[in-house]
Length: 393
Image (cartoon, rainbow, N blue to C red; front, top):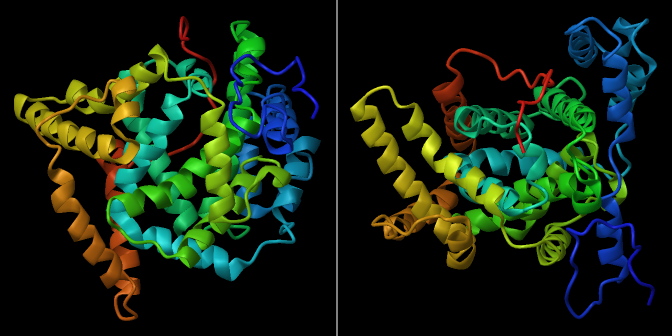
């Protein structure tokens, strides 16, 4: 068995009986060294345009197609061309079934997304570094949650991932936003590739896809909301396409829920325990709403809500990781005793033929309300940032 390349970043610490250089582990480690070359080329081309012009071209191309942009940068045209090409493995019926199952889960999925998927992402002491470069944790956390909610809502819509669907458009905007963050991090001169690998690399983008698919499904199940094996695979199929459109290499993406869980175990096993940045991100997740309350009454309600969410978070991620992240134990621990039977009933009812459409509408209404609670009537723009906050990270 060959050893791991010495060039791999120090963050990668694969243990276990497979050995550090099993093909699967080696593949994950090497993914830390790769970016998204096409998206990076797009943002480099945008940098030569007047401010805002590149993103406007992207939005036009997403809405109207590449023929509407005859003089656009070549990299952007190449990116748009890829959107017209369906991967050979894509089964649109399964993708739509996965989207429908996710949409029907509504508020339950919202809880798992915020209290498990995002928290597990924050727990990665190297994967969280690009996010820390943005700074302003208290102020930006609610907006980040709202934009994430809008992203999940959009990809879950019927036809959302079709060529001119909103889900596909937002996915591509997220891809370009990631590329712009990489560009800004490079220009900052403060990134440590020998420790972290490339910023927003293939490994970490793959991990995000798994957190939004397999980890979300397992979180729903832990809350009592049953997800069938077929539904779990269909949700993974949906996110396999989302991951591809977000810039993850096709060869890395798992074909099934079981394979996604296997990858998740390997990724988790090779990362270090949470660090201070992990704890700062999680603290901001729970304190941002009380921090932004405008009245004592609003603050009291926000603090009670944060307490309930902390209890649900501990249930979803386990006490050991919750302790490492500083998620406090509180008097709301018994809330899961009420939540689980209610969600178990909801899952059964939502599958009934006469209820499926109503459940999807209710789920959609939940996501719309979650976004509006923070953004009001404003749209989630997903525009690439122009700068990083000075002194961040």
